[in-house]
Length: 232
Length: 111
Image 1 (cartoon, each protein chain N blue to C red):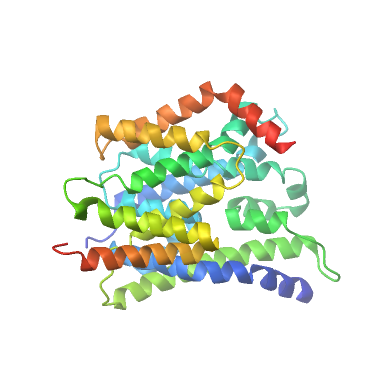
Image 2: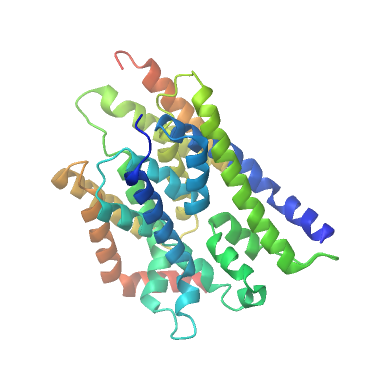
């Protein structure tokens, strides 16, 4: 147990380092939107999905229809559907902890689970459950701290909301690197510009996503082949 | 600011439900039938398309009437992308790009 806990702490340290500035930044933005540390922390526990939580700031600002919110939330996190596929067998050995691992299956915890290598004197289940729990704890703690600090900060934070744009640009570049085809990004950008011209900034997102998903389904034979060839 | 009431709670619950449903989906339908191949396909192909759409969503208020309407955003996106292609350090790219944007909007003439 002792060795497992140390190992879990050690392997989650890089994630802690990454969550610190991002969690603080999101917390400050929540404070600016008028939410306290408790509300911010509870949102982190309930949603526990970093990029969606940044996107939610634009929902809190008001004016986004509920249907649009649901579609955006589902599509933003659609990658999570594929995460569970790798663990359908192995999570059976975790008893009730299985539900905790599914709840906390974020990008970071997925990568930790995939990267698990047995260490002498450690128990795989203890290490994985503790690692996931630590990652949740870091995120909740840092976002709450950010919201508490945000109330005290008198700095001019105009423009800090660009962190959302920068986050999405960085994720997009990472996804494009080594991708078998860049067509999905091209279709999405084209569809977004088209819908912005037709519907304007307030109502473009839903039609744009619908057109993009439809185009990807129509092009499935071609794109699935490209993906499969790259995977061989 | 008004005390958070019903609307923010609805947003949090909706976003939590959507996320948890997707994380649990493979476990829920396994055993009864295999994950439909179209779901698997969308799970693989959608992320890049959605992320490109979200970048456009963040830039939706850009206007081309005056330089203040587009220059800060486009310069900061270029800085973010440039930093990321150069160093591949997520935090450096996000904070470099955001600092650049903050400097531009806070110091922009007449901005």
